[in-house]
Image (cartoon, rainbow over all chains, first blue to last red; front, side, top):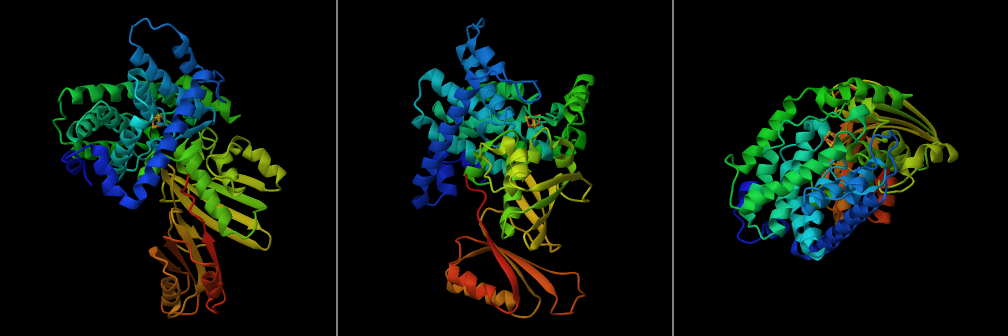
Length: 278
Length: 226
Ligand code: SF4
């Protein structure tokens, strides 16, 4: 299925994904597994908000808990919740804790941050989040047919980008968005991550990855908001995916998860790499 | 990627390609051996070579060789546990040529057998093995994989396919490769990898194993579950 076809689905986009990918007799088992994965995501969020144990490098570990426990000077509880949830998952990940890759481990916080964060803030039950999660998976599946989803293949735009697109579509559907709106939410999220480089300091999935998940989960919610207002990506969604892929392939190897460019190639980044090599 | 590959795996961090994928490749190598490896030389290429420590790739590879799944809480301690289990590990970095940036070559020794296996972690925990003992075969670990080392002669592939068909086992993919002997020269060494949608029954495996043209065969589990 293409995004174009998904967009034209008569009902919910998640139902179209389910029917397109899964034979009727296997659908209930799939939904049960998805429900289980949602539970795993939630448990990673919980552990991450409770722990301030530093990762092995000492670069991250306390960000989610700190944000979560501080007062909210902006008066924007949704924003705070989404960011804290996203970082909670990625800090668990950095501590070699148990998480759900969505679609990768480095980008594992974006989707739960946005989807569970919005769900909790607005009072949705976990059951209501399962079909949006299926849609997120479907969007990731479609993107992966054009580009392998990994920082190593096309930079962060090919990793956080798809995760934000998935999260945007999921949040859009959760809030009642049509298939067309959900796909446009995904496209708008993706078109605004194109070109993002993958430059993890010392090669560790910590800096910028933890804060990056916080930012791009908010970005996903923002994309859902635009789509729910009826705004659309001027460039057709499938073309946005192709653009993401071609920009990703143009990135030099230094900016594709080798830990040799960008933030990794700063004096501080190089110092961390040297320290940890010892 | 299937839906459960996109939202998944459930895994120990920090990297789906460098931790979970690495663990799965090592699991496939582990299951290609009959008994647990005692010596392992792991050659890391590209991004695997450059960021192995930061992503826990070394521990994930050790964990897979010990038979642990990607969500096993023991992964962070796998290097220590490997030493305790009598697995001698050596990591080397080397340019393996024009292959995916996340590629690892396993050179393993176990009781009475050796194995070399090379594979790549493609992203999101998806992996691909493309060389076993020098034979260019190809499998993803996402099915029940049947590996057959056999003599390169007429009818072997047909026989294997027919016996599987009689057992109602559907073949998803099939790759065959012959050894380095010259073209047209029959009777040399060959290997095939078959990805099967359901596992063949024990008597089918036993029947195939005793065929004169079959040197050995292994049934590898689906490592993409979870
Ligand atoms: S910078 Fe690289 S490792 Fe970090 S989240 Fe982005 S793609 Fe993943």
